[in-house]
View: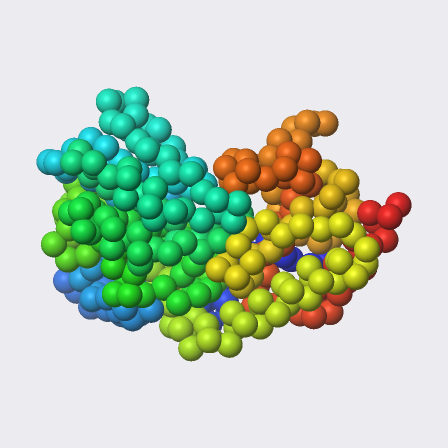
Length: 374
């Protein structure tokens, strides 16, 4: 039997069209994009076309996109860059369910005298806008709330949260690493000041990402060197992967409208199939305001290790709990959502992709039906 990959939130394969576009920049178009000769000019042209494609997907100007190595760098660039540049305050606001690429930079700032408010979430993983309104003070420099959660898929009402921050003259950043390329993400609609993009979450290579910076917003760079990427990200650009990111944006744009509903239908097929197999399953996260590909499911009476064992090595998923020997600890996301401890320990994240088929979903259901009954 062919292996089944249902861990697309961890990483995706490089799309064939993406690979076709980036390979020439590893072969013929190898010049330094800062060079004035024909080799450098050809390389620079590829980078600027990619910048235009990323901007097109996000609904912004090309001048508002800089390229990074991925979401972790983009998030750190904003959080630490604002801390260094902020003249108004040393207070930051985030949520309890953020990715470590946001939580750890915030904790780093706390060690240097900054204060951070970690907003709670409800049972669906949603931030209450009223909590944000109460948390903002005259000392608040930045609010950073993820667009969608990487574990449970819940999509926040970023437009409303950003509006609240803007009304108080506070900058707003959103980590959209799991959203871009899967659902509509338009910065002109969201009203954010900064937005993070991760290439390998939507069929570009690992090690490439982008950061949207609204024109007029100021960051201080984490690194110092030559003036690449508006002076914010020095170092010779990774032209091949940048071109790949641009190609991934071009591929994603026309298929979002149909691919999202298709994956949502497959996810419902999985969850309902498990119910029909008489397994006691519980969906974690918001049932509607969610990424269509992300299905975090708890198996009542089983731990994540039990479920992984039943699936075997040929079906790739991610446990929603950390397994340390015989000890199974619930994730910080499910804990923040107030999930029942026994259910949180039996959580599995199934994340679907463009290649996922009904036949694969049915095979997973059958594998679990047989394996868990044993």
